[in-house]
Length: 152
Image (tube, rainbow, N blue to C red):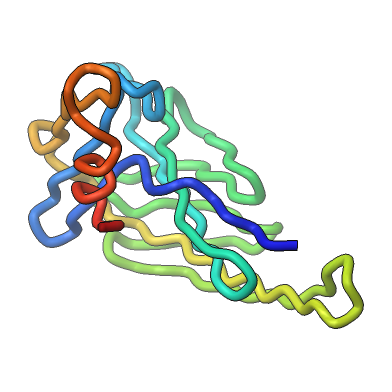
């Protein structure tokens, strides 16, 4: 079996703080003024298959749960208190927590290695969120969109 996943649905530049997303395609919701912020998730597959996928979730309130991660609080300086699989994390802005697990697939010769990362980019300037108005059926082609997200 070969696995392929979709392409990324947003682009974040940690140096400039710019976040580009395409809400008209229905992938990522627009951030509301009352929201705490965004929680970004993504996946990359390599080996027998390939591709990247990503998405943003609005963090409406804390605590916030996403899969096996719970963000409990954010302090004045942007540090977060979170848990990952019951491991307590206190991540200052710029800090990263990494983990790795190995499991067997359905085929006895298949070994699946999962590498995870939780990075706290701290507070970002909301004026640097760019809601691009690209739409596949309204003039922008899929090729242009793929080029914009760095896959072409």
